[in-house]
Image (cartoon, rainbow, N blue to C red; front, side, top):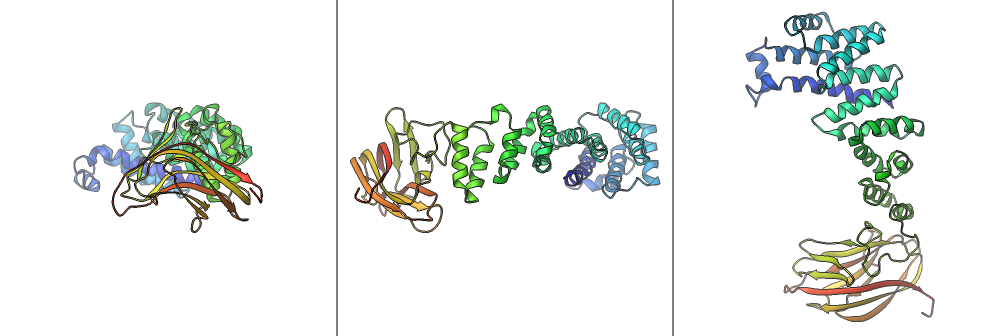
Amino acid sequence: MIRPILVVIAALILAAAVVRNTAVAAWTPDDPSKAARLWPSHPAVQRAEAMAAVGSSARQGDAADAVTIARFNSIAASEPMAIEPLLVRGIEAQSKGDLVRAERLFKLAEARQGRALAPHYFLADLFLRSGRVEDGLREVANLSRLSEAGVGQGAPYLAEFARAPANWPRMRKVLASQPDLMDPVLDTLAANPDDLKAVLALADSNRLNAEAHWVPIMLNSMIKADRAGEAQALWARMTGNPVGASLHDPDFRDARSPPPFNWELTQSAVGLAERQAGAGLHVIYYGSQGGALVRQLLILGPGDYRLAIESSGRIADPSALNWTLTCGNRGAPLATLPMPAGGNRSWRFSIPAGCSPQWLSLIGREQDMSGQSYILIRRIRIEKVGGNG
């Protein structure tokens, strides 16, 4: 697990050399390499080329060559506060097994230029190779935080390490010291439903609720993996809602709990669906473009059910709005039920074996003549019925 981390930090040190070159690149922004040709003796060019050589050698496990060492001696003589000579001496010390001196030199470079990537890279490399994993991960986190690509760049490598339960105590310390890395790491783990235990083990108390950024990512990954039951259990745990209700929020009062096991409401070119406090769900369908306005993911067992709706309003065309029930995202609708303009209506439908989960959706059907539909849905409920229900 450490090897991928070493690969990324080797790449980051090469990126650091490029960043070093930007001052000279400003002379010719469209062709940074031209700066080296125009002014090869410029100190920034010398540092950039020398650090690139060191980074390339380090990536291959080799020591810097004599020419590169001579460059750094020249830099040290002309720029007493430059960090590159410190880094090279640290690399030499590390290659000879003097890890104490190497660490001291790398930390001195870090103290001189705290936002430079190179010292963090070499410290991470030293710590990880010598078994000081927690310290090494902290330096990887620093690299990720300071990189121009943002904190998310190191998240996949930290997540790879975080998957093993034995590493959770170390990762908790790293994430506690680098809180801006918490969401990127959890989001990366959440993309794999098998990593739920790691997410729950590493998330702090502020991220164990329905508002946490990783929750919809994990729910989506579980559903894609045909693990909707586990997704619903996680959703219930994060929201505090019970598992087993046939349909959540029948009167549209719960605006806090996230989809897909609560209503997903549309605001788009298709139309608008929004809750009205104490009244129900207000739906406007524009009629010029078809699509879903409202939907919720259900987990109904095989059997017969009745869907009942209380509503009022105006529908431009009887076929403009329909409720559809589909087995997951597969095939044609299992049932299509016309949305009533007003009053109380109910329909009976059946769920066959092997049809789980199900999407219940209110679909707008594109009209030949544009006409808006306005509906207030006060309540919608689904009940299981017996053979003679």
